[in-house]
Image (cartoon, rainbow, N blue to C red; front, top):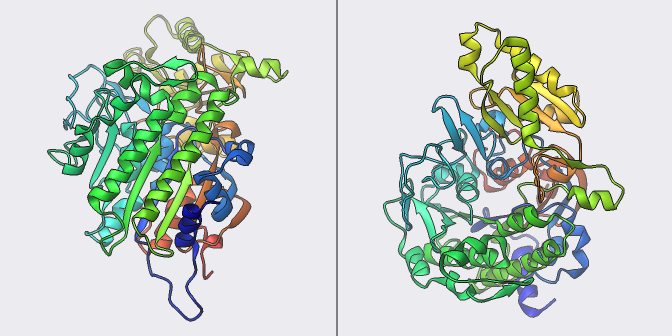
Length: 517
């Protein structure tokens, strides 16, 4: 381990002499999320890690059996859980997107037409409320660790950073001083929810046009262009994570995070691993390359923290992921494993045909499946004077009779709270009546609803099993093999910080890792 890493580890882990008092709170909490980073990436590539991931695995409290306990396992849901401790049943974040019956359109988890984009052009209004719409945390119905931190001390600062709006906004919460994401115009943007203009440090960062440094670079046989072509390509490359790390450094310096005599919070989500993983799957050399580059990026970030003269035991770092990912079915076929592909249109057609045959003609679906969830046409059901529960059951029975359908649940079942096993409990944890759909479909393990690449979203372990590592202030290093939930992160942080647990938090404080317990 080189001198700088040793210095960093010493700064994080050095215990005070006997008889002395450890600092009551850390100066800075940094929550690091790597999008689509399966737990096994910490073991498969461990011998090659030499930087930040190696430091975390060697000097952190490493939980080997941490899982998400809800459906679906997607970016918005995972990022909302990490710092709130609340499953969708409490938070209302039921997916990356859902059909809003109130607004009669598709909405995303953070889209908000009442605000404007700051630092980049505000997109034109669209029929659906999509990722291109201005954003805010208003659809998140619970608070976060950052919100509780700021309510406890108004001088505390909370900042969120990511390539994706939802990954910057949802972990940082309602009271964050700012949330920033990468815009397709090649700069970092924010929302008027946080202020009318970017803080000066962010404006200065954008003025330097740091994304342009990657024009003409090559990665794995692809040469990157310039301008809009480059900016659209950056997320699915190592350069996306490098930009996030550089912007996180600028945020720490610009806001003087950790240097003002109060506890501050920075949430950083590295999104590029997800963009790459969707295209090629978890077994591709590009995913391994991205993991090793993440190790390097984190090493650079940890070196930066040392350069900020952070004192012994004054930083608390949490490392995790928002979800895992399924293998490519084609790769599974090579390994003589089960798996395959099932078109989403096949699921829709099965329901449409079954309901037409039983209840008569009509457009029975108002939206194509959204993350394994179907929304039925409630207006048509009322027009025909049908019982909604009976229609749901008819749709579910038709789907359940088809090959490679693992489970089907109706909204009536989930509203009653099915809990026969882990999968059923996960489905119930993901149900929020006002936003969830009517039919919830799980296809067989290793089967995908996408025609190419891979995806995630199920409660199966390849999607739900993720790393959770705490390192630094108040943490006892070691390997912890007991089962935990990602919902345990927020109450653990709240306990260490001595603040109120977030309103929807349902996990437990991981007191086994706390120094002094």
